Image (cartoon, rainbow, N blue to C red; front, top):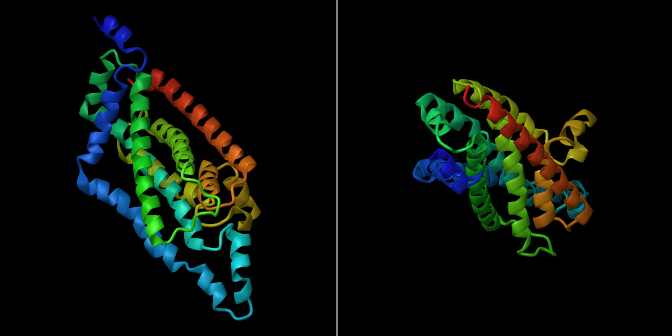
Amino acid sequence: MSRVNEQRGGRLHGLWALTNRELKKWYKEPLLLLVSVVQPVIWMGLFGKAMNLGAVFASNPGISQFAGQIMKQTFGTSDYFSFMAMGMISFVVLFTTMFSGMSIVWDRRLGFLNKVLSTPVSRGVIIFSKVLSATLRAIFQAAIVLMVALLFGLQLSSNFNPINILGVFAVIFLICIGLSSLFLLMAIRSTKWETPMAVANLVNLPLMFASNAFFPTKMMPEWLQLIAQINPLTYTTDAVRQLLIYNMNATQLLIDFTYLGVFAAVISTVGIGLSLRYLGK
């Protein structure tokens, strides 16, 4: 009977049922949903507006007339808030995906994982359902962040096209697949939630601040630039800026998408491969 069900469902049998289960944990907890959206909004409102670098330059009579040019050369836009608001997209993605590993630990401790493993659902689908749920949550939260950023005064590029929003969602999709798979790899054999949480807390700040989310990499020390050049969040943030606030550089945008695509493909493949071997142990 199980073979018949597996044949009917195919390799993705059970994917939506498991994904929907993960999403229910989120949208049926209004407080959790509110906090996940409010956090980046607070960062934008407090940090983004408090760091009014344009006003710092403008307040100096000697350079006030060149303030716009200085900001443009440094940040690629004359408004630091717009530069920083795009970094909030990476912030949302990182802090949404980092909890993917926690889910697999709780499923193991509560006995749900063993029940799923006894069904015709493949182990790859179990992992991918958690990746997909994190991706959908991140896309939803990023959309809210973008709307709030517009209310706060986000300055879009002169050649912005609404179709570019689809490109932003594609960027989020790729980075979420990669990062969710990475955090799931860290927790795939763990039985204590403290372990993946400690590891996630260890890597999230280096990932965030060793990127261009808040500051351009060209202004960083050389050793930090080397780290930023292999950091997937650097390519994520740059792609979002290319699509929304920069005068788009098609070559650089292609590089960003290529890097994110390779990162997502490699990490997710490794994650599914290890799940086939270690998930039930």
